[in-house]
Amino acid sequence: MAITLELDQLSHISELCTEEAEGAVRCLACAHRCLIRPGKRGICGVRYNEAGKLRVPWGYVAGVQVDPVEKKPFNHFLPGRQVLTFGMLGCNFHCSFCQNWKTSQALCDPAAARSIQQITKVDPEELVALAVKNGASALASSYNEPLISSEWAIDIFKEAKKFDLKTAFVSNGYATPEALHALSPWLDGYKIDLKSMQERRYREMGGNLNHVLDSIRLARELGLWVEVVTLVIPGFNDSIDELWDLSRFLVSVSADIPWHVTAYHPDYRMEDIPATPAAILQQAAEIGEEAGLQFVYAGNLPGKVGSLEDTLCPKCKHILIRRRGFWVLENHLTSAGNCPDCGQKIPGVWS
Ligand code: SF4
Image 1 (cartoon, helix red, strand yellow):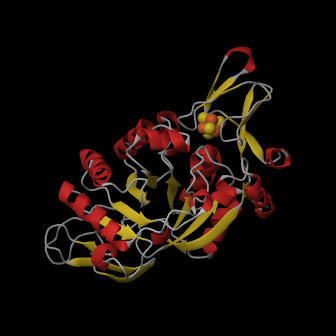
Image 2: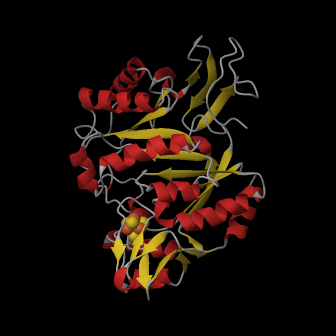
């Protein structure tokens, strides 16, 4: 495909792999762990073996924007601050409901191939300078799956650290322990999509549920700030049983993990599925709270989900942060992240 030839010009050799027999390499960036023979590509299509070396995307963005951190979404990570968000092309999943399919599926869906025209060559210093110039407090890798270009993100995040900026991933969580260990010294926030608790659903998307669950556990153990998002899709993952399974799993890792249940809008190959009604998000949030989660948020329906956009103190129920959509209307947290009324410490990255 012409698109891969063009992208291959923008690549670096990676060491996030093992060398195997007959010139093959095993890529360790995501849980597919592709064995890639010389001249071949991994499942994501953007990482390839050239003469026994793994080459990976480096030196371009297919999208870059400065916008509120709440859009990622993060609610306990620098609330109200601006984040420079960048993305590349390609993905290791092929979700029928992808809301970023024009970039994520650019290598495997001809309808998305025009995204190659959005590419801008850039280096980490230029991106970080752009973040500083725009007053951003953090940089985030998003829009397509950041794990498949972990090396590019690490180089940008290393540069960001020189300017005391925070860093974040907006990811499907289909990581390997090797990738998470490589990223964690440079990464602060990790937003993970937990799309379902059904193995068959993950197989339809091209993955395996347990690897995502393992990533959520390991990211917490490594000290990353983790928030989890479930796009609630009618008929796909909105049964009472599944919402309980999602909630119980998160509580088993930590009741402190913010869980965002967000509304689906018809998109890509699931345009026949109706948008998620507010009542389903409210039901999901009730289940999450009953299961023991301290912070459950409903997203994508601004103004229609009552106080489920706000952060409440889990001890005294004081409204700490009031939001509408991506906007912070009030923030009463102390600078150390405590409730001003009862002094309860609220988990998160606040400064
Ligand atoms: S990032 Fe994942 S899908 Fe891509 S080559 Fe590596 S293991 Fe395969």
